[in-house]
Image (tube, rainbow, N blue to C red):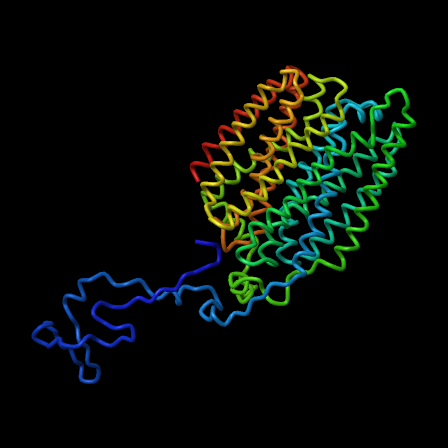
Length: 485
């Protein structure tokens, strides 16, 4: 059943017409009726009817408030929904770009700031660390203050962090760039949980999965640009630190300008919800008494939902693996192909762009088929196969093979992200989609932290092969959990 869509049936008693009238031709002798009377009420009972199982009660009695008048609920789709989706996707893009812009040229930033690879890894990991404790107040804010307030915080902090980075250009200012990255990581908390809310509040029933996939797509595109542009804007000029600093400042100022423009667009474009809801499911929810909602109760309900708990772990494993691979891609490639910073960025771009196509195709597929569990399981299995192939072809000495295997891995691994969101909303309805998405992202960050730190250490000590095998083992476990939903 699609979330929010209830089917009404007419239950008719045996041998009766829909309007309640009995069938003709039965006599008292033929039916064996017994009559009971107390003088004022006359009841006629049929023993055969008494032995039959009573039909279920009319569904109207069990509907959500306002759903009994489902046919009277007015809905409408607004063109503004595309502007809301576009602005959100773009500032989500910039936030994702700021996450990966250090890691893809780890060796260059190590040289410029004179720090270890672990320190540069932490510029990525801090996004995940900040998310875990802040996701609960952030989802509470989304449910209590609405989409607009949450979006303004995300876009505003994103722009602030970008400007602070502009003040971090200097070999001794690593602490400033770390502070700026912390601000951007807080902004991310108010971004990652919004795709499903924007999709459900602004888009129609047959657009929801595609809209959610498009919103997630913005974040993925930001990662793709984060892989592509930094190696181009900041080439490895190890013998000229001044030139390196100048190139870094160009990247930082450009990011700050774009993020400021998007913050201004957020102020004028994004609203909490349209004047009329886009679907009857949203109309029903909007007619329900708001005072009955309890954020604490919603969290408790979600943790009592066994399929959702299994999804939390399996989603965390897959997304955490993607975070780890993205963060450590530079170290994996440079180990086997020294001096290939530009191609490393292009491989990362291939990984994410392929995933963007996977996201859109999976979103369209879900909108048409609603086969959430089956699609999730198939994509998970194919992601595992892609990870195994990528792992054992990394050291073949052929970059073209790496481009191909990274594309296959990205198509399924990043294509899984919106599927997990939509599956979570489906199996937890009518709980808030912001709450379920927030918990999914929280588990993704926890696994991302663990995987990045462990795989990073394994890569440093034993090489990329051992680190990737570590991820393969966990993804295999994720397949088992997904099949148990």
